[in-house]
Length: 425
Ligand SMILES: Cc1cc2nc3c(=O)[nH]c(=O)nc-3n(C[C@H](O)[C@H](O)[C@H](O)COP(=O)(O)OP(=O)(O)OC[C@H]3O[C@@H](n4cnc5c(N)ncnc54)[C@H](O)[C@@H]3O)c2cc1C
Image (cartoon, rainbow, N blue to C red):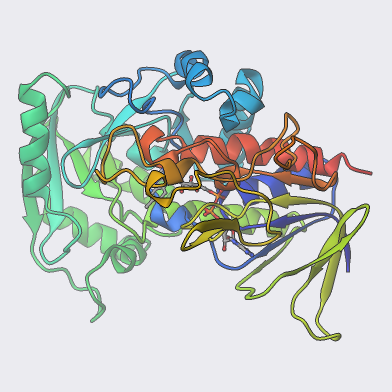
């Protein structure tokens, strides 16, 4: 089967690349081993929270910090994409989310601090509408509500830690905590996913409001773990706001993340509606190469294995978590095409012995080197396959963990790589 663009990877970078290619009129196909790391994330799109090793305080604006980032890391994916195209890609992402009925607020020009379930903060720049009222610069009183038995969220711990930050003048609102007694989930285990599915039902929401209304004080905002529906979070939010006559917001929980899953599902559905084919769960992709470039992939090694060919390709396979990079004793390698990966020869230089070192872990910046068109290059800077582009975590020099930049880099590079791939005739 022949396509214009094949994207490898169904994470945020791959899905954005497929969307951009499709929008340019390309017939696009996504092939992936698994669903990518969106379900591990908060569902928020981090822009640039920190320049590791320079300051402990979160950056006020990712946009304003770009020039400093470029000085520290001249080959950073953001430096390659450039300011205008980053802004363009993120604006496009927000428009797309609006169309998909999963609105995101915020801008790359300003970081927002959102509460974490442990009562710390997370700098990020685009947030689902359901989290917007949790922004820690909004003053007032907040009731954090938990569900007794839900292990991933203790409202009491979160409120205590956030109040400490409030007393230090680091966050504007003050907090108190309550926990709802055991809820009836029809015999299903009490966890974030099951709660979210329960919140998709109007009847469940009515029952919930009845229980919580007497507890909520006038003028208080209500902060809940991120479980306001897997399919209809907008409807759930609007209804709770109206019935409680209060602002309501979600706090992302540890994985599997309901907001991350919402984004994955919506993007996937949107692409499929637009005619993009998506195959997730593929165990072995074997590249078909010729002296002119990459031709396609076969889904197995037998001569009857299905073969998918295209004019151009986007590699969006992530780093170690996504599966795009792997390591053996003494070697780090790119898993699909064995593209060159630059790393120190001495293994002890891959790691920082202090796990949570503010300067980050060196291995988080490893990846594939690319030129200004996001084409992977060899150690001499020569393009390896003229019809191959790379996007997201697999691109070297970004460190989503310590910079808090993963989603922004995935969108900016994915959007550009998809457009460039669609331009190959
Ligand atoms: C725990 C955790 C929490 C995070 N939280 C946030 C957050 O809140 N906000 C934020 O902005 N960022 C966050 N990030 C960072 C963010 O998830 C990543 O930077 C970003 O999602 C990378 O997207 P990607 O599409 O490049 O790769 P991934 O999402 O990792 O996707 C890689 C895709 O490629 C496929 N693949 C890999 N190798 C192969 C192969 N050989 N053959 C076929 N398919 C392959 C995978 O199956 C997958 O579909 C977090 C990361 C982690 C690990």
